[in-house]
Image 1 (cartoon, helix red, strand yellow):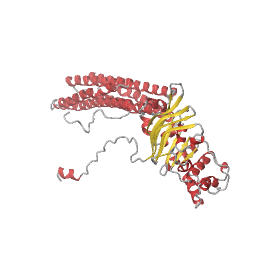
Image 2: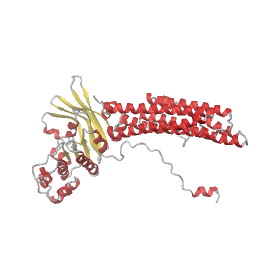
Image 3: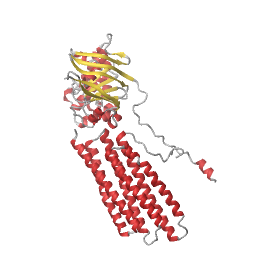
Image 4: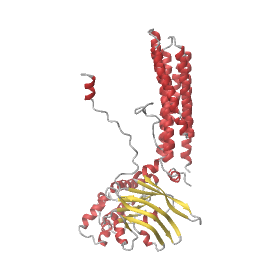
Length: 285
Length: 225
């Protein structure tokens, strides 16, 4: 066999092309398009001129120091701030292109499509079953009620824990289980988006890990926005991360601003803004 | 401000620089032993490698603990990763010094060729300079200084190629040929030390910019160079 013959029979070496670091996942569909959003309580500004897009089937984390308007921001995404009389919202929150603050938009429908889970688990003092079924009954989704409750509890990774005690009082569950029950309650009405405001800050590390795993699973079906104080949690669970900071206005009042928004990996390895770097590395303040 | 994290980072970097000083001592010892055909000094260089290894392990364990306990991110994470790589490069340089010392012992009793010994002295001095520049660039986070290593490396590479020619010119004498073949390996060791210095320079660029890139791409050389 000649050398040329040998060369022909050797499979060509696949030269690995150097790949650019994936800055953001491809094929993104925008769920929220936030444009120049400012919120104030009375005359006190909470956040100013926030603009960015939140993408479908991703976990988007909102991080930043206390008082930077993280919770205010997330509450504008399902009009929870409507419940605060002094809250004033300017700018646009487009949800699939529709302004959530438009005159024809029904806040009840908004909150059905965009569910929320709070910092402290807040189950009703009712049975586990009734906690999940409550929203379904209110919204008239009463067909196949048992199936819907089961599915929601399964999605919240709670079904195996509670299947034999559905009629027991929800307040008998552990803190982590109560939080997963609240997630099941939010999921039962089949929302598209799940907003989570510090969902694990009142939980122990094991319960926290379960919530984080759950977020990872749920993003296949839902779009998740999570506010967290815990930067490592954001690093672990989020695809995209928005860093909110504080800006001191000329009258010495402080307001929250969006400093940087990027893929989570970028934020935690190579942030573009010095303020972000100072915050994530713990050099803030 | 995370005081503990900053102190840990400072301590690790100081240990790394001390390791660099140990490598410079090892290299100087290896070069002197080669020039003077001093087998005793060569033994000292070989034994001295334990010092470098101890420091290497200390830095490695410090990095492991820091990652586990402090979970550094952003510039801190990049510094830790750059130190992890640099630590390994320094340790490998010291290994090459040991190889030079061992080769020196193997040629004891063979007559050296003075012109080549002089060439090694110059290559060695160049390698020392490159190590110093790499460590300085690391401390000062100076990408320009780090990039300058490429040109210095090219000088060592050229000297290495000259050594090949010189060995071929040594003629048919068996003893001289054996000496020459051993010296090819010495030359290769010095050339590799230069490469590792360039690699440290690349870590400096990563540390500063967050983007890893090779200063020169040996697999895809630019046309005409």
